[in-house]
Image (tube, rainbow, N blue to C red):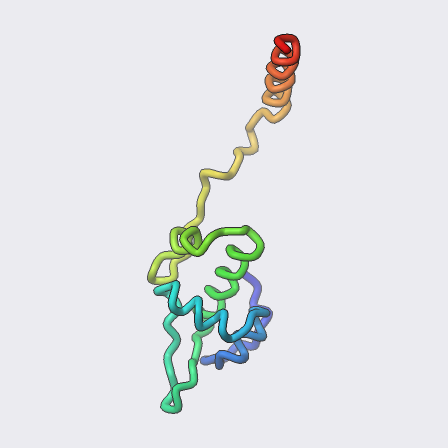
Amino acid sequence: MSNAFPDKMYYKIGEVAQIAGVRTSVLRFWETEFDFLKPDKSSTGQRLYLKKEVELILEVKRLLYTEKFTIEGVRKRITPHGKILVDNSARISPEFDHLGLLKEIKVELQALRCLL
């Protein structure tokens, strides 16, 4: 994951919202939905996010907005402790015979057309 944000110890909620491109209310909502998002609070009650949490927020945004995961899907992809799980089941091996599969599909479609 690229670090397109300043490297510092803590980030305030406004900074994180700007980095992630979401509103602060979205971040507060995500805190209620995901156990791995529990920022520290300053003595004045200001949320203080660690760099790891900012990276997780960027991953949550990617999963929700780009990959179109549901909230539950994100929960399954990221553990309550913030470990991102990789789903290798959806990947196709490089040895997979795409052309052969397409030919089989074509033959089956032609057979179906003959039945109609």
